[in-house]
Image (cartoon, rainbow, N blue to C red):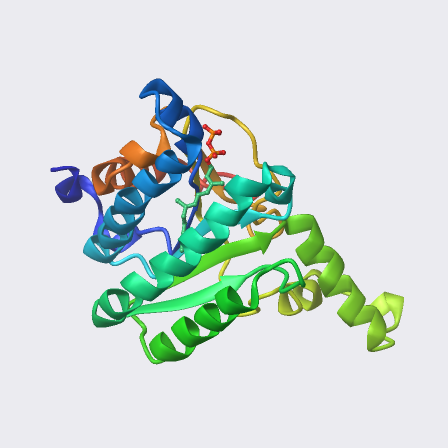
Length: 239
Ligand code: FPP
């Protein structure tokens, strides 16, 4: 077990994952793309448990992007229902594990009201938990997030000279979210895809060949071990 190789004293505080490759996983097995998403649920739960095993405090998962509306209507409909169903079926279990569930993204009219209601209920149910903050990025795009932050600042008539990076951070969807330390994408694609761009300014990037439905906590432990072997300089020199 690679958990023993993880140095618990130097954990990344915040891990972000792009859960990619569900469609290709399904295609390899002559299944429908949506079967690939469904198979991703086991990976999702195992990765959350892996974060809890290590004691990682923040985990952010990309469930639906602002660009995913371009997918076929049936797949979009499936993803809406699937996300709702995961929340309804899993939130008590997550709550018992000490997981605080939060969401980032645009709450626009395209997101079904029923889903928004389940999102709000899941957030309220788990608000008192502190072991792990699980943020689900839903109808999320990093550029839209920055645009929304700037709009709020402009609406406050802030003078240009007083605009700072810290001010922008405080107007993002979750101002409490810490910077991303470890940014992971599965499926052998090497793209950022508009995910947590502001928060990942100094993140260590890890790209795994594994398709998301095959992702397990051991992959996450290995990624953390690799992260711990890297030399983070934040633009300065080695310490
Ligand atoms: C990318 O695979 C995956 C998605 C667009 C959706 C992933 C969503 C889940 C696993 C459900 C998450 C739910 C909660 C509540 C966190 P892809 O379809 O882009 O795969 P491909 O690149 O092989 O086509």
